[in-house]
Image 1 (cartoon, rainbow, N blue to C red):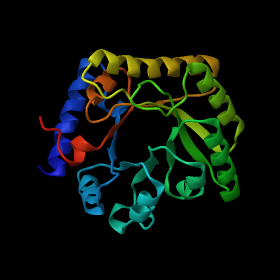
Image 2 (cartoon, one colour; image 1 turned 60 degrees about the horizontal axis):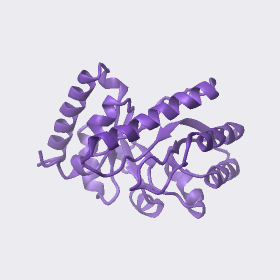
Image 3 (cartoon, one colour; image 1 turned 135 degrees about the horizontal axis):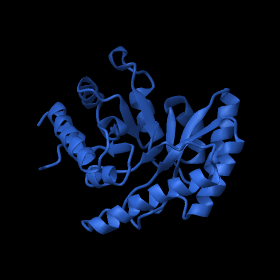
Image 4 (cartoon, rainbow, N blue to C red; image 1 turned 30 degrees about the vertical axis):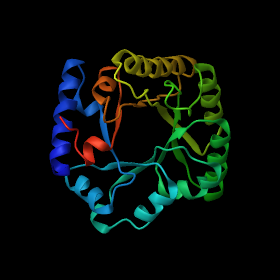
Length: 231
Protein backbone atom coordinates (compact mmCIF):
# COMPACT_ATOMS: atom_id res chain seq x y z
CA UNK A 1 0.00 0.00 0.00
CA UNK A 2 1.26 3.47 -0.87
CA UNK A 3 2.17 5.97 1.84
CA UNK A 4 -0.52 8.35 0.61
CA UNK A 5 -3.09 5.57 1.07
CA UNK A 6 -1.80 4.85 4.59
CA UNK A 7 -2.15 8.52 5.45
CA UNK A 8 -5.66 8.63 4.04
CA UNK A 9 -6.66 5.69 6.27
CA UNK A 10 -5.03 7.31 9.29
CA UNK A 11 -6.87 10.54 8.56
CA UNK A 12 -10.18 8.68 8.48
CA UNK A 13 -9.43 7.12 11.85
CA UNK A 14 -8.38 10.48 13.31
CA UNK A 15 -11.58 12.06 12.07
CA UNK A 16 -13.74 9.33 13.62
CA UNK A 17 -11.88 9.57 16.94
CA UNK A 18 -12.36 13.35 16.95
CA UNK A 19 -16.08 12.94 16.26
CA UNK A 20 -16.44 10.39 19.07
CA UNK A 21 -14.78 12.75 21.54
CA UNK A 22 -16.48 15.94 20.36
CA UNK A 23 -13.28 17.48 19.05
CA UNK A 24 -12.38 19.28 15.84
CA UNK A 25 -9.93 17.66 13.45
CA UNK A 26 -7.78 20.81 13.36
CA UNK A 27 -7.07 20.43 17.09
CA UNK A 28 -4.81 17.43 16.39
CA UNK A 29 -1.53 17.56 14.43
CA UNK A 30 -0.17 14.52 12.67
CA UNK A 31 3.58 13.91 12.84
CA UNK A 32 5.30 11.38 10.62
CA UNK A 33 7.95 9.57 12.65
CA UNK A 34 10.58 9.28 9.95
CA UNK A 35 13.43 7.61 11.84
CA UNK A 36 14.80 4.70 9.77
CA UNK A 37 12.90 6.01 6.72
CA UNK A 38 14.54 7.11 3.48
CA UNK A 39 14.30 10.59 2.01
CA UNK A 40 12.20 9.10 -0.80
CA UNK A 41 9.65 7.88 1.76
CA UNK A 42 9.73 11.27 3.50
CA UNK A 43 9.06 12.99 0.16
CA UNK A 44 6.11 10.66 -0.43
CA UNK A 45 4.67 11.62 2.96
CA UNK A 46 5.29 15.28 2.16
CA UNK A 47 3.49 15.01 -1.15
CA UNK A 48 0.56 13.46 0.72
CA UNK A 49 0.32 16.55 2.92
CA UNK A 50 2.59 15.86 5.91
CA UNK A 51 4.71 18.80 7.04
CA UNK A 52 5.76 17.71 10.56
CA UNK A 53 8.37 14.98 10.96
CA UNK A 54 9.99 13.39 14.01
CA UNK A 55 13.47 11.94 14.33
CA UNK A 56 15.09 10.16 17.27
CA UNK A 57 18.82 10.35 16.57
CA UNK A 58 20.77 13.49 15.81
CA UNK A 59 23.28 11.84 13.48
CA UNK A 60 20.62 10.11 11.41
CA UNK A 61 18.55 13.29 11.21
CA UNK A 62 21.60 15.30 10.20
CA UNK A 63 22.42 12.87 7.40
CA UNK A 64 18.91 13.24 5.98
CA UNK A 65 17.93 16.81 6.79
CA UNK A 66 21.07 18.95 7.07
CA UNK A 67 20.56 19.88 3.42
CA UNK A 68 16.83 19.81 2.87
CA UNK A 69 15.83 19.38 -0.78
CA UNK A 70 14.21 22.42 -2.35
CA UNK A 71 10.96 20.59 -2.93
CA UNK A 72 10.35 20.02 0.82
CA UNK A 73 11.72 23.25 2.26
CA UNK A 74 8.71 24.03 4.48
CA UNK A 75 8.88 20.97 6.74
CA UNK A 76 9.08 21.14 10.53
CA UNK A 77 11.41 18.71 12.31
CA UNK A 78 11.14 17.66 15.97
CA UNK A 79 13.46 15.58 18.13
CA UNK A 80 11.43 12.79 19.78
CA UNK A 81 14.21 10.50 21.02
CA UNK A 82 16.39 10.51 24.11
CA UNK A 83 18.90 13.32 23.68
CA UNK A 84 22.35 13.17 25.21
CA UNK A 85 23.99 16.38 26.36
CA UNK A 86 26.93 15.97 23.96
CA UNK A 87 24.45 15.92 21.04
CA UNK A 88 22.65 19.14 22.01
CA UNK A 89 24.85 21.48 19.98
CA UNK A 90 24.04 19.58 16.81
CA UNK A 91 20.39 19.08 17.72
CA UNK A 92 19.56 22.75 18.03
CA UNK A 93 20.78 23.34 14.47
CA UNK A 94 18.39 20.69 13.10
CA UNK A 95 15.23 20.70 15.18
CA UNK A 96 12.61 23.36 15.88
CA UNK A 97 11.40 21.53 18.99
CA UNK A 98 12.90 19.04 21.44
CA UNK A 99 9.96 16.92 22.61
CA UNK A 100 11.95 14.57 24.80
CA UNK A 101 13.30 16.79 27.59
CA UNK A 102 13.44 14.32 30.47
CA UNK A 103 15.91 15.78 32.98
CA UNK A 104 17.08 19.11 34.34
CA UNK A 105 20.64 18.69 33.05
CA UNK A 106 19.35 18.52 29.49
CA UNK A 107 17.33 21.70 29.96
CA UNK A 108 20.43 23.49 31.24
CA UNK A 109 22.55 22.29 28.31
CA UNK A 110 19.89 23.31 25.79
CA UNK A 111 19.76 26.79 27.30
CA UNK A 112 23.57 27.04 27.28
CA UNK A 113 23.98 25.98 23.66
CA UNK A 114 21.08 28.16 22.50
CA UNK A 115 22.63 31.12 24.29
CA UNK A 116 25.94 30.51 22.52
CA UNK A 117 24.11 30.26 19.19
CA UNK A 118 21.94 33.31 19.95
CA UNK A 119 18.70 31.42 19.35
CA UNK A 120 15.66 30.05 21.17
CA UNK A 121 14.26 26.53 21.26
CA UNK A 122 10.79 25.15 21.87
CA UNK A 123 10.66 22.17 24.22
CA UNK A 124 8.22 19.67 25.66
CA UNK A 125 8.76 18.03 29.04
CA UNK A 126 8.49 14.25 28.97
CA UNK A 127 6.54 12.54 31.76
CA UNK A 128 7.18 8.89 32.57
CA UNK A 129 3.78 7.16 32.57
CA UNK A 130 4.53 3.61 31.37
CA UNK A 131 6.89 0.89 32.49
CA UNK A 132 8.06 0.21 28.93
CA UNK A 133 9.82 3.56 28.89
CA UNK A 134 12.38 4.49 31.51
CA UNK A 135 12.76 8.08 30.35
CA UNK A 136 10.82 11.08 31.53
CA UNK A 137 10.25 13.02 34.72
CA UNK A 138 8.88 10.67 37.39
CA UNK A 139 6.08 12.78 38.88
CA UNK A 140 4.18 16.06 38.79
CA UNK A 141 6.42 17.84 41.29
CA UNK A 142 9.57 17.13 39.28
CA UNK A 143 7.71 18.38 36.21
CA UNK A 144 6.84 21.58 38.08
CA UNK A 145 10.47 22.14 39.05
CA UNK A 146 11.51 21.58 35.43
CA UNK A 147 8.85 24.01 34.21
CA UNK A 148 10.11 26.63 36.66
CA UNK A 149 13.65 26.03 35.46
CA UNK A 150 12.59 26.32 31.81
CA UNK A 151 10.82 29.61 32.51
CA UNK A 152 14.04 31.00 33.97
CA UNK A 153 15.90 30.48 30.67
CA UNK A 154 15.20 33.17 28.04
CA UNK A 155 16.38 30.74 25.38
CA UNK A 156 13.76 28.08 26.21
CA UNK A 157 10.08 28.20 25.29
CA UNK A 158 8.05 25.54 27.06
CA UNK A 159 5.19 24.48 24.79
CA UNK A 160 3.73 21.43 26.51
CA UNK A 161 4.21 17.82 27.54
CA UNK A 162 4.81 14.42 25.97
CA UNK A 163 4.62 10.80 27.06
CA UNK A 164 4.81 7.23 25.79
CA UNK A 165 2.08 4.86 26.91
CA UNK A 166 3.04 1.28 27.78
CA UNK A 167 3.07 -1.07 24.80
CA UNK A 168 0.19 -3.34 25.74
CA UNK A 169 -3.20 -4.55 24.55
CA UNK A 170 -4.68 -3.42 27.87
CA UNK A 171 -6.65 -0.36 26.81
CA UNK A 172 -7.21 0.70 30.42
CA UNK A 173 -3.44 0.99 31.01
CA UNK A 174 -2.98 3.00 27.83
CA UNK A 175 -5.87 5.29 28.67
CA UNK A 176 -4.55 5.83 32.20
CA UNK A 177 -1.17 6.86 30.78
CA UNK A 178 -2.75 9.50 28.57
CA UNK A 179 -5.07 10.71 31.31
CA UNK A 180 -2.07 11.15 33.58
CA UNK A 181 -0.41 13.45 31.04
CA UNK A 182 -3.60 15.50 30.63
CA UNK A 183 -3.84 15.76 34.42
CA UNK A 184 -0.20 16.90 34.54
CA UNK A 185 -1.04 19.62 32.03
CA UNK A 186 -3.87 20.89 34.23
CA UNK A 187 -1.63 20.71 37.30
CA UNK A 188 1.08 22.82 35.68
CA UNK A 189 -1.38 25.34 34.27
CA UNK A 190 -2.80 25.89 37.73
CA UNK A 191 0.71 26.22 39.18
CA UNK A 192 1.94 28.48 36.37
CA UNK A 193 -1.01 30.35 34.80
CA UNK A 194 1.36 32.24 32.52
CA UNK A 195 2.15 29.02 30.64
CA UNK A 196 -0.16 27.91 27.83
CA UNK A 197 1.23 24.35 27.47
CA UNK A 198 -1.00 23.82 24.46
CA UNK A 199 0.81 20.74 23.16
CA UNK A 200 0.04 17.26 24.49
CA UNK A 201 2.23 14.94 22.43
CA UNK A 202 0.85 11.45 22.94
CA UNK A 203 -0.38 8.65 20.75
CA UNK A 204 1.51 6.40 18.32
CA UNK A 205 0.57 3.86 15.65
CA UNK A 206 -0.99 1.38 18.06
CA UNK A 207 -2.89 3.77 20.34
CA UNK A 208 -3.46 7.14 18.65
CA UNK A 209 -7.26 6.93 18.66
CA UNK A 210 -7.27 6.49 22.44
CA UNK A 211 -4.85 9.42 22.71
CA UNK A 212 -7.23 11.64 20.74
CA UNK A 213 -10.09 10.67 23.03
CA UNK A 214 -7.95 11.67 26.02
CA UNK A 215 -6.90 15.06 24.66
CA UNK A 216 -3.81 14.60 22.50
CA UNK A 217 -2.94 17.55 20.28
CA UNK A 218 0.02 15.91 18.52
CA UNK A 219 0.25 12.31 17.29
CA UNK A 220 3.59 10.63 16.58
CA UNK A 221 2.90 7.98 13.94
CA UNK A 222 5.56 5.98 12.13
CA UNK A 223 4.73 2.36 11.35
CA UNK A 224 1.09 2.86 10.38
CA UNK A 225 2.03 5.80 8.19
CA UNK A 226 5.04 4.42 6.35
CA UNK A 227 4.34 0.66 6.47
CA UNK A 228 0.56 0.43 6.89
CA UNK A 229 -1.49 -0.50 9.94
CA UNK A 230 -2.45 -3.99 8.82
CA UNK A 231 -6.15 -3.32 9.28
